[in-house]
Amino acid sequence: MKLKIAIALILVAILSACAGQSATPTEEPAPVAEAVASPAPTEEPENAYVFIDGEAVTTDSGLQYVITEHGDGDAPQPGDIVEVHYTGRFTDGNVFDSSYDREKPLRFTVGMGQVIPGWDEAILLLKVGDKAKLIIPPELAYGEAGVGEDIPPNATLYFEVELLDVQPPDNTPPVAVAPEDYITTDSGLKYYDIKVGDGDSPRRGEMPLVHYVGWLEDGTKIDSSRDRGTPMHFTLGSERVIPGWNEGILTMKVGGKRQLVIPPELAFGEEGAGGGLIPPNATLIYEVELIAISDYHP
Image (cartoon, rainbow, N blue to C red; front, top):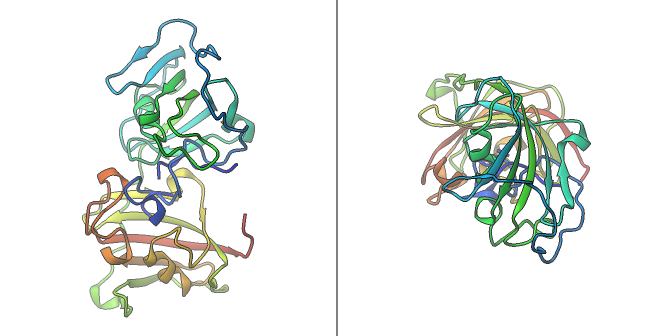
């Protein structure tokens, strides 16, 4: 099973499939980057697995947590980039995902809707070096929908987490481009090549591998694959990304970096996305670097 901890690629702000759920290029909000899961139980047996031995703190939202080991590092603030190791379990104790197994912690921007709400809330309660156990109710996880066959509907999820690092966000604004330097397509997309690549251009059905940063017009950063330390890949021409991405990346070359100015009708339209992070009728600015092209479909 492959999951992604973004609550909706960034990867929320990019994926049209996540509209209204997140602001990163992920297809569905998931608490992990990639995972090999045990089969999800069809029913959650009561008290089948003792996860927290003793009393836990319960927040107003319904999140339960207990800090099992105290660190002495900094506490993250909304917008900071955090590194977290974790193991996720179902009610019966079966592990559905673990960054420890992959030997690679998860990086994300905390408080920005890139992960499920229970994670955003919980990580902000910790300090670097803390280890904690979390019990996340369905309404702070994947709710009535679940995630395909991997996370069942109305599932309570159990996480052991370790906050490894906190870094301030990179608030570098997009490259300033004079209006006359943009190329405007028939659809209304504007683009400017910061650097022209010297490799091949992707074709529909192939999988570009890209790094990207996205902003609102006022300079508010909405998502960044660089903050997570992991580039994004997707099938060009699919509905997994917003139309402005499909069009804007189609004419790039490997090694190139391009700024895209994407009007609402080629982005998230009247609905917006990311639980309010991307407002209705928002024009989005992305700087995308095309790293490689693959015709492999996972």
